[in-house]
Image (cartoon, rainbow, N blue to C red; front, side):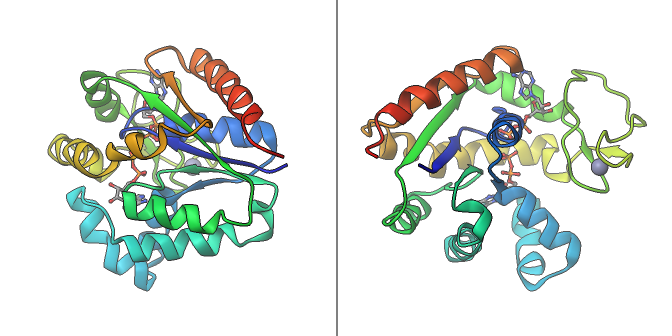
Length: 221
Ligand code: ADP
Ligand code: ADP
Ligand code: ZN
């Protein structure tokens, strides 16, 4: 049976961190719409050109664009055995479209990572990413030096331009308004779980694995 997982949670909750580790441990793809959009901006594709200003303002890219990107990605062969979605869905319209994509596939498992706002602001203000490949530099904590190199490719580490304080505040507002309603959308399902994201990454990973295992028991074969 395929493991079709969604990571839900506000910016900075640790979705990318956990999605990457979990996907690698199960040999299924991590599908991050934020990473895909940043790649498109970097490559100068038509979607990238259209999305660039929206991302810079901290607003959401149009639903139809995002739904198209995810539909195409989930149709690829490597997603047949399962996937971890990070950053999608972000609106009720996206969640409805994803449910339609799942009609002939195994049920979604939805895990919400819960972290309070003050900690989100702190994490995002200290997050560093690779300037070359976009990977997040983990495990450094506050005060990581900018000249520390990327563990994947040796590239330089920089702050994401939308992790700027003002844009972060806007992203958190938009999360409350447009994405938080997804908790209500999903929480009645037998495959919905919440984990405490305020713990150390390894503890979060352990809770996440347990939550997914217990949610999987609720999925009809
Ligand atoms: P998201 O994908 O939800 O926006 P990230 O996975 O990029 O979040 O994490 C945001 C920042 O917080 C990164 O700098 C990351 O290294 C750090 N981080 C992730 N998980 C934890 C944790 N459990 N405790 C402390 N910091 C964390
Ligand atoms: P984070 O998890 O740190 O908030 P992401 O990397 O997931 O950030 O997303 C970065 C930006 O890309 C978002 O602020 C938004 O502009 C855009 N984006 C990513 N995923 C979506 C989506 N599913 N719908 C609309 N916009 C998206
Ligand atoms: Zn890199």
